[in-house]
Amino acid sequence: MYIPFVDLKTQYNQIKDEINKAIIEVIESTSFILGKPVQEFELEFAKAHNVKHCIGLSSGTDGNHISLWALDIKSGDEVIIPANTFIATAWGATLCGAKPVFVDCDPESYNIDPERVESAITSKTKAIVAVHLYGQPADMDRLEEIARHYNVYLVEDAAQAHLAEYKGKRVGGLGIAASFSFYPGKNLGAYGEAGCVTTNSDDLAEKFRMIRDHGSVRKYNHVLLGHNYRMESIQGAVLKVKLKYLEIWTKRRREVANKYRELLYDLHNLEIIKLPKEMWYAKHVYHLFVIQINLKPEKRQEIRDNLRKFLGENGIETGLHYPIPLHLQPCFKSLGYKKGDFPVAEQLAEGGLSLPIYPELTDDKIEYVSQKIHEFFKKKC
Ligand SMILES: *Cc1c(COP(=O)(O)O)cnc(C)c1O
Image (cartoon, rainbow, N blue to C red; front, side):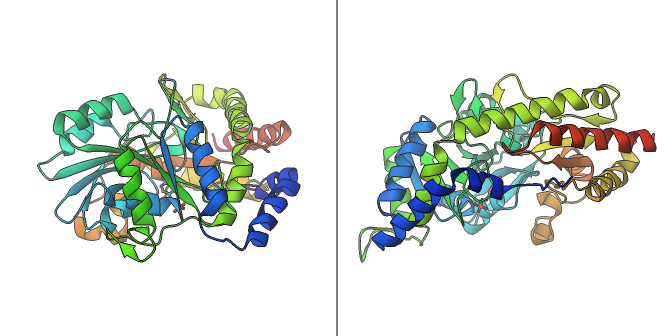
C-alpha cells in the first residue's frame, strides 16, 4: 500500500473534463490576467464565506502582505503573530517594515493564546494576526475583545481554513480583513500559485484592488503605491470549477478526521498520543490532522521521528507542521528569541506529526494508517 501525503491526481481525474474545458477557454480568450474567470470566482468565493468582498491575488503570502499594507502598517509598528504557523504569516509584517511579535499557542486548540496576546501588546502594537491553524478557527470573540480594548486591528490568516466556521459563522469576515491561500495542496487549491483577501469594508476592498494592480484604478494612473499581486485567469477558472465541490470535499475531510479519531482513540486514552481537539466554538475543516506524541517528554522528538520513519517504510507519507517554530527560525535571529520562550509551540514542533488527510482518502487506507501506528507503539512500549 502507498499513501501519499497529498493526492492531487485522483481529484483531477474526477473533474478532468470540466477543468480542461475551463483552462482551454482561458487560452482561447487570450485574456490571461484577472478578467472574467477571476471576477466570477471572487463573487462566488465571497458568497461562500458570507463576506462582502473577495479580491483575487497571486498567492496567500501576498494576501498576508496586502492585508497589513492596506491598513498602513509600517516601520516602527508591531504585529502580533502566533509562534506556530507557516513563515508567510510573518512575512506580512516584515514586508511592511513592521516587527513581528510572537506569541505562544494554546495547548488545546494549537491556535494563538488570547491571554498571552494581551500581555504582548505594547504602545507600538497595530495588529493581531489570527491564524486558523490546521483548519480550525482561532478564538475570534476573545481576540476581538482584546483588539477593541487596545484599539488594534484583528486580521485573519485563513490560508488553511476555507469554509471553516466560528460559532456558526464562516471565516473570512470575522476580522477587518482575511487572507486565503490557494496553493495546490490547500483545501481549495489552484493549478499554480494563487490567493485572495476578503473584507466587509468597501474602502479597504477598493484599496486592495488598487494595491494588487500597481496602485491604479485606471491603467497608468497610479494613485497609491502598489505592486503586481494579480491573480491569473487560468487560476480563477480552475478555482471556480473546484469551488463547486468544496462543501462535499470538506464534509469528507471531516469524515476522515472522525474515522482517525475513532480508530486512534485508544492510544489517546492511554496518553500515548494526543489527538487534535475540535473546540466547542469551531467547525474544523482539517487541512491537516496533527497528532502529538504524548509519551516521555524528553524523548518526544525521537519517538516522533521513529514513528515517521516506520510509517514511511510502510508506504505512508507524513508531514511536519512546523518543525521549527517562527521564533527559532534563523531569519528572525535578530529579534532575540530563544529556545524555551514558547513551550507549547516548541512541544508541537518536537512531537507533532501530520497524517495524510484529503477527501479522496478511502476508509481502507485510513484503517491501514491506524493499524501501522498501533503496530509501532506495540513494538515500542
Ligand atoms: C499556505 C499558507 C500561507 C501562504 O500561502 P501561499 O499561497 O503558499 O503563498 C500563509 N499562511 C498560512 C498559515 C499557510 O498555511
